[in-house]
Length: 201
Image 1 (cartoon, rainbow, N blue to C red):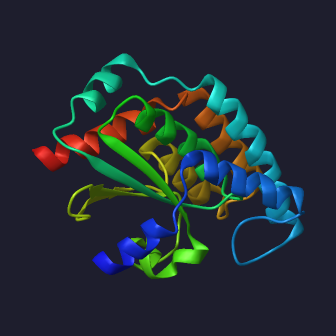
Image 2 (image 1 turned 30 degrees about the vertical axis):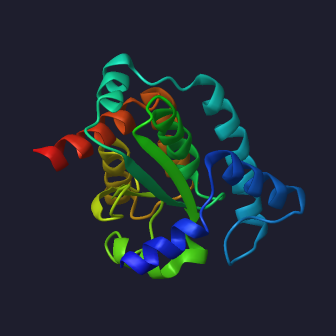
């Protein structure tokens, strides 16, 4: 897997470059990924607005900031994402803000469809659910942990909705976005910091 990771890192983006890539494609009437459709473009445009808002409003809480600044060594957070993914639009800006508050973390973002070999190692119930955060030792590139595609509360919301309605439809997606709005990125921060704590435990 190490060679796959090296390859993905070579083709990965900084957060700023990822945002630029998505925005440039939208300007051309396209979305990221190997499929193109009016729906995917529509979701990409919605997500662009969401990410823009989150970039301005998300704050890393002090407790998490302290823990991130006091990590034991340097890490790479490699995130598999796509511009059309609603969960990614809510989660990736939070991960970016977290990486910004510490010199112990370097954030790299890679497009899922362009990096299928790596995605295959990190399937969720057999599916290519994103975003997926892969936590790497910066020196050895060893995979220490992974997280995603959703925080526990968001995951539960979708499971409950599916149990009650049999499908995940537009209403479910709206409920999910409301959950993220209400949570303000706190669950994401807690769960990713916990991931680091579990490595050290």
